[in-house]
Length: 183
Ligand code: SF4
Ligand code: SF4
View 1: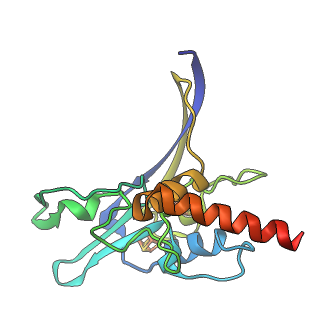
View 2: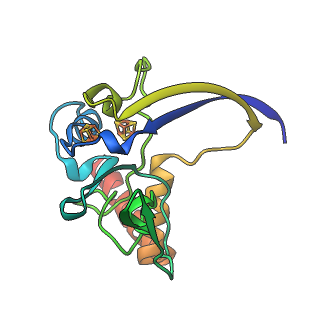
View 3: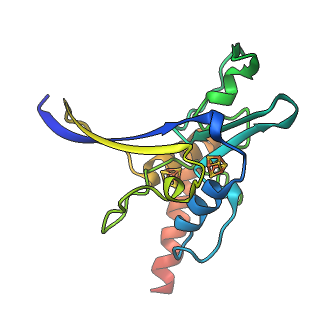
């Protein structure tokens, strides 16, 4: 497979500085609203601050890949005397929890680093984190050429996993018939 130069976008998280203000969640959900900035709802954010007040835990986590199956185990990590569940760090859109899912449809959300045209100088969550928890960096790497699935493909995969390909195909056929009738 051919090698191509790829821009690698990284957000470094200094979780010790996070105070749980949730500005990052508001900025992300507002930027991704349709139309842009028309609403904000932290439940639609692609960054979520995992919070456990009694343990003084504030951990910003970014939505990653969709997975149809949950892990079988739950490991515990102790870092600087604080106890974290393995799930606290996990970026997966997984059936065992509600985060990183579009609240109305249940479709998976994924951090897209605020890809837009024209490109932003830095992602919105980084811009609006006034406590310097989130630091943005860009580097270049040589990687194997590959196709990245679109948001639509990821959403479709999750619907097919939930309802089965036959039901989805029937629904698409019905909908396309309806739209042909309207046209
Ligand atoms: S980088 Fe952009 S898409 Fe990703 S969590 Fe931050 S604001 Fe949301
Ligand atoms: S904006 Fe920064 S300080 Fe506030 S919750 Fe998000 S990461 Fe934490």
